Image (cartoon, rainbow, N blue to C red; front, side):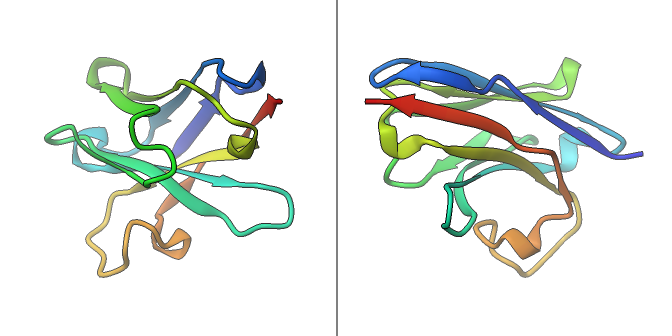
Length: 126
């Protein structure tokens, strides 16, 4: 069975840091793209960043660029999202998702994901 297990969320003061993890199993990790999305209350689920495991290339939306960093540990089939200089507007439920099949959909399209993990809550206080 495919599993994506996100963890590491919590409550942090503005300016603080958190590291989210997404442990994957049940598919060929090395051939996948792992995407982080977040969803704030009353808002749409939006892409935050992604990493292509095969070459470790990554992408970040402008609002987190320079503050968030993705990395992967192939031996553990796990990706990490290091979040620094957190702001109250980063408050959301964070989800990791995986793309393992060739698709024409954009990696920013939630409907283009093949698998989803359960979310982890990140709350940043002001």
